[in-house]
Amino acid sequence: MRFSGTTIPGVTVVDLEPVRDRRGHFARSFCADSFAEQGLPTDFPQHSLSFNAVAGTVRGLHFQLPPHGEPKLIRCTRGAIFDVAVDLRPESPTWRQWVGVELSAANGRALYIPPGLAHGFQTLADETEVLYLMGARYVPEAARGYRWNDPAFAIDWPRPVSVISERDISYPDFAGG
Ligand SMILES: Cc1cn([C@H]2C[C@H](O)[C@@H](COP(=O)(O)OP(=O)(O)O[C@H]3O[C@@H](C)C(=O)[C@@H](O)[C@H]3O)O2)c(=O)[nH]c1=O
Image (cartoon, rainbow, N blue to C red; front, side, top):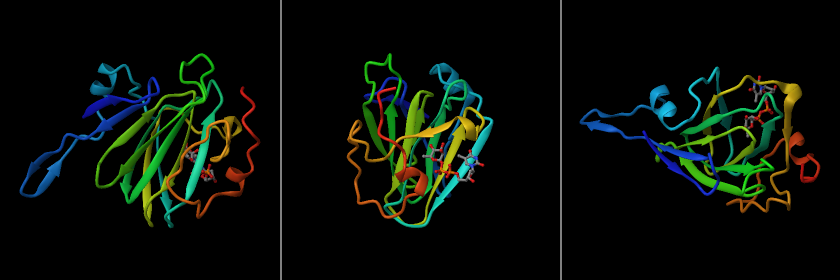
């Protein structure tokens, strides 16, 4: 695995290093030792799959309040997504900034997002599947979100939104907290 930083401290691109032969390839998609060397979490007690039928679907922007903040490792195992992290850490030099990375089954890329950031994505193909490794348990009472089109973030989404949940269009404006 190859780790690369992004414009937001802690948000890390994780690329595969496939070993190829005539059958295809083999690549480690998670390694606790490599994550520890990078100072990243190694305990991911929940793994979740998200299936999205239609291109243009948006999910997010989601996060959990402390102490339930979730480190997330996000990978697209079928289709493609534009994956977004928004920095909500008030002490961060990149507070309120966002970063977007294309993850696809074809590019094998994953994105690590630390706690304190909101996460969302837009699908770029029909029948897109996203696999999460979650570094904290799901606590619905601690779940919060901001709208995908909140002017405080001004995220440049690649497509018009085709499908989004009622909850995700109803979040109030970001108030700076
Ligand atoms: C997130 C989650 C949901 N659920 C349940 C609650 C609900 O009945 C159903 C669908 O949940 P949601 O509508 O919250 O699913 P979704 O909108 O896809 O939520 C996800 O969005 C992306 C952007 C993230 O970053 C994830 O952490 C998660 O928040 O699944 C779990 O049981 N465990 C979980 O970890």
